[in-house]
Length: 205
Figure 1 (cartoon, rainbow, N blue to C red):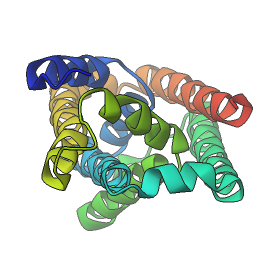
Figure 2: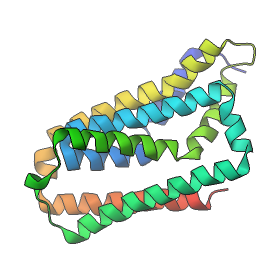
Figure 3: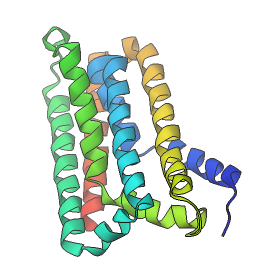
Figure 4: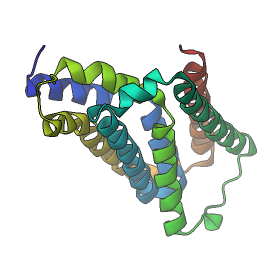
């Protein structure tokens, strides 16, 4: 068993940089509400990931995975939520009507982003399984709870910082991205990606 923090950090950075569900959420959130909503969505993702990492560090994650009905309930809640977000994005793409003047106030947009980020991660049991597979390779049973939590929270910390950077970069390009054709394409692609993640979550054992 390796206890190298450097090796763990390199692995965490690699995992954080790989585009996935979180990346798709940030793209859509930033296009809908700008950098502010993108950052709040990233914060929600980070909070949910930190909660799941803490659950694994405390031993609760393994218990959740072992309680099959609970694990299945969380998984199907995640499938339903991803399907709802995916169809919403596709519906927007098909409609193709964007009225920026009708956007919700900044506070409401921020809350929507935070809520979506939290719900998407908390209802994804694959994150729990990932933490359960990853942490024991770098942290042993003889290590303190503080060591377990520090390792568990490194991934949310790095991942959230990366998503903040992505949202900031998209804000720079937002003038181009707000073109109607580009927005419809982005919504269509995002919707398909979200539905794809939902389908994979539903079919994986």
